Image (tube, rainbow, N blue to C red; front, side, top):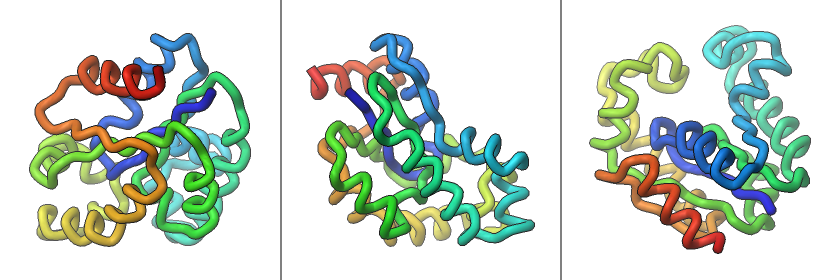
Length: 168
């Protein structure tokens, strides 16, 4: 079985994924971390030096590499659903879980991480930028996911409990 966590940046995919994998005794894969290993540079550096399109190609390579692995929790990057290839791969998977959050929750989670987030780094109005990105991605998250979990006001354990109920 695979559990794939999707959602906007800052919703807790990595934190939830690590803890969920431990609880299930599964391997944990963070696609962003794997991209950094593959490229031998940080994600901000990839965006700055090679551009977003190159980053998305690396993201597809990593998703294809790990998507057939069993007994794994995969935490994806927030924009993974923006390319057709990744969208189609995820659409055909089971246990794709959309961690959903309000703009306010996302902002509170990302407040001190702006420099690590290439798509937010240069933005003068964080709220507006998040709303713009979210509006272009939201329906895609919904369409590829099997379940939506609202993380607003919940801690990691509460989110994991909901996931465990869903995956049985």
